[in-house]
Image (cartoon, rainbow, N blue to C red; front, side, top):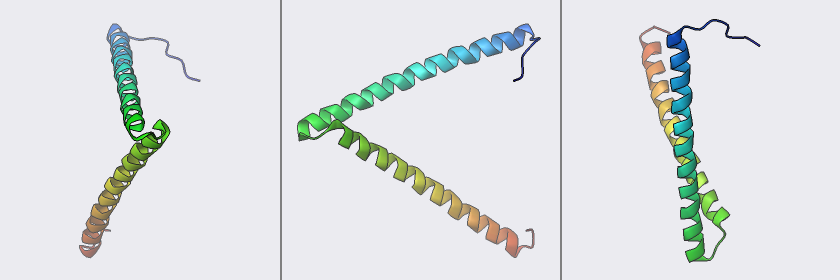
Amino acid sequence: MSTITTLTDDQKKRIEDVIDAGEVMLEKIEQERLALKDLAQSLADSLQIKPAEVSKAINLSFRQRQKDAIGEEQEKQNTIEQLLHAAGRI
């Protein structure tokens, strides 16, 4: 385990600023998580289903969109690699 022994005042201030900003961001994330939970609960109540089912649908949709974005980037990378290979660069 490494230890931080000597820090300048600027480094200490930077650490404090990052921790403060991180706390604010985590609070915002928590508020958004609770708002999403409320949305799922509201829809579940109106459809007479379990909130967990709504949450699962949201999560699955989100993960699929992420996979789609990764797939698109991989396709771009493949095209770039083909171009470089054709040019004799790789």
